[in-house]
Length: 357
Image (cartoon, rainbow, N blue to C red):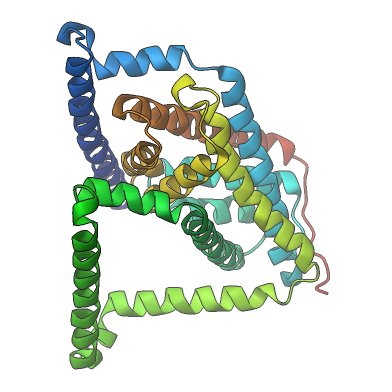
């Protein structure tokens, strides 16, 4: 009973965080949308952001939403294959369908409690493949370590291709134009340098006390697991295939954002590099613990689209179209299908471990 209450409280907390962020994002976009209506001489009674979102959903080209779903499935087929590469040296070769559905159920679980999906994913595969949970969790740590490197690589590509565009946008919106660009750049650098100096001094002075903190130990364990995970990649027997599937996973993530552009008229003409920026910004939004990135994803996706001149109302509509296409159309629908099908396809299945190579 106590455990269920704690789970309910956690769910309520994260859902509250997501809804709160989404509410403030909505208020911000509503203000900008009303200002645009005034500029266009549109009566206030005919200028509702909620109604616009509803109308935009109705006008969505669902062929491209279906293509987003296809990209989602292809990405997770590659993730399932890559997961097998981590499990094989441990002496296990689960069925691909079980690995694939376990991954989808993990995404589904993340909509309730952020980050619980990894545990649910590990437990689901362990249940149907008789693999110890601690071993599946260990492989997921490696999996997520590679994902972190992949996200940082994608962010590096954004900086490589669009640094000037992004910096110009930040200068105009934070520094109020070119005249203040050097002031904004100087202030940003000074604040960053001050934070680094203060943090470094605090760690040097209170080193022993900091090392005793649970959060420090937890961070140390995460870092250790990350490094061990990266080292284990060198032991794989098919490194080129591993690299291919790692690239494909994140390429399909990018394609989900880019393909969704074509589903919505105001974004249909944006270039692929804009899809890359929206995808990376949105990914950072999902890292913040809220259900499926609710609110945080919207904020980051809207900011990314604003860089390319998409209006506040259109950007918010697109963020909702992509968010609900992925989280409802992909994670929920396919997740429910996985929950229903797993017991059926494993009714007479008896897994057997393989010999480690």
